[in-house]
Image (cartoon, rainbow, N blue to C red; front, side, top):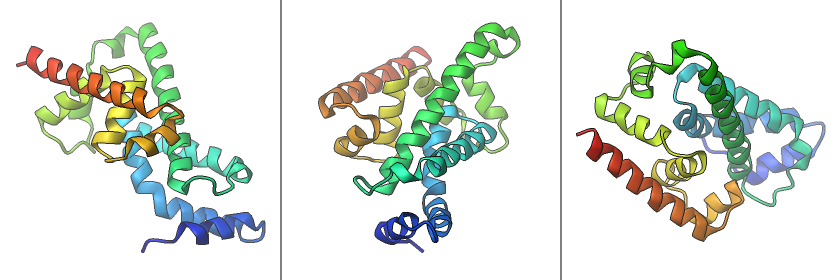
Length: 182
């Protein structure tokens, strides 16, 4: 059952009902946020950890939410930033660890018990993962979430024109990736 954003905002605005409002918010948006995060960090376990951290950050900053944007937009910004921070840390760690550096993303996905795609989907995820952070995030939000550029602009704090360029460059790079791996 979908809960109205205004009801959640009313609940989280009152210190006596804040926890109840936050719990409704978590139930309402967990699954969509999980998939946003999963498309960035790729594995189930890491996605769960990142999403939990995002909700902890949202809870600790709940007073900063005043309803100027949609709740999902606000939560998306937090979750995406957490996911991008996680991948940056992971990339730094991989440069140190040669054990993990040899295993490519497609192989990691195919080995993930929670991944239910085929080899083509794994290659698509590998192509997406090879994109720079901003292009990858814009592509995921536009392609999978079907977000409008105006909403992505609010989530990422970037101009719509820049987002359109990033998306089209990302599509070109993904197309080139598949041509190279044919």
